[in-house]
Length: 344
Image 1 (cartoon, helix red, strand yellow):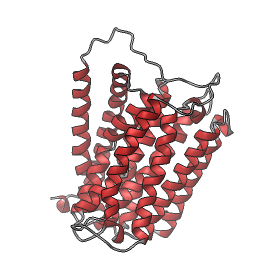
Image 2 (spheres, rainbow, N blue to C red; image 1 turned 30 degrees about the vertical axis):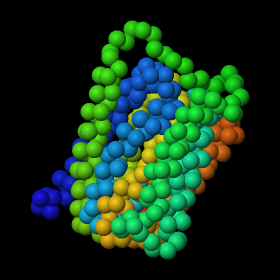
Image 3 (cartoon, rainbow, N blue to C red; image 1 turned 90 degrees about the vertical axis):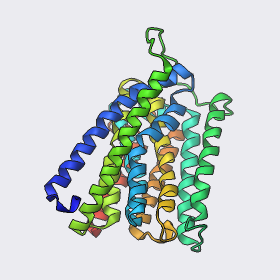
Image 4 (spheres, rainbow, N blue to C red; image 1 turned 180 degrees about the vertical axis):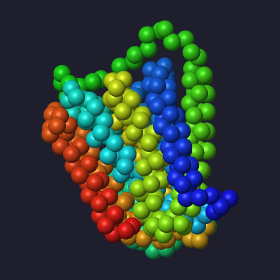
């Protein structure tokens, strides 16, 4: 059916999908903040696990749908390209929080732990790419290891918050994660989770539409799947992270903002597991190209800079943001420019 539509209709469809993702992501932020306060789990953990996973759902569906269609490069680049784009969003959020560098004000051990976990998870696809083409029922062992390590990482994140062995130095600019429930909100907790679940369903349906539209655009334009995945579908499906991050910063929920991005990126590595399962022609990691690996390296470099920024905790930097934010924007802009010049 999509083959019969004019090209302008495909672009309009992507625009409508982006609008739905923006609206859903904005609503999810408020719900996640209330759930964090109501349950006592904390902004960093709820941002990293619940909000991060929910806002990533449309991207999950894009990668899985692309893999089922045999588009390995689109499935892979949508995942790793989204990680790079979402990390760049933190620099934009840093511009919004004018009191201090965001990574300084949102000091939280759970976010440090998840950043290191993300680097570990991103290193595994590199090993799979460079290693032998081994599969179990057409699924690479690395794809089986990713969800196991992710689950162990969530447990470690929770424990590091409950019984921290390290504590960030508190300064006047540090914004602590405090329970802001004032007793006036009498909405049952189950209704908060139900509303959140319904929004997740909308995200999933939108992701399916984006995958089909992106595949058709790739076929018609002749652009590489890596370029379309990293700079079109990845950015569109990452819009919830942009809205939720900016909305969380405006609410003063800084740990939720930082945790939502880092946790969403960590969850995004599971796209690769689902994509490898959906890709029936062998190992996903041996069906991708150098351009896909380029975006994986970009995401790793930006995550490394973010982790260093959280450790260094510069109070103020250029334009009122941290040097790590400037570096992350520079890395991402440079990657986009290089890929555009190379034509994907």
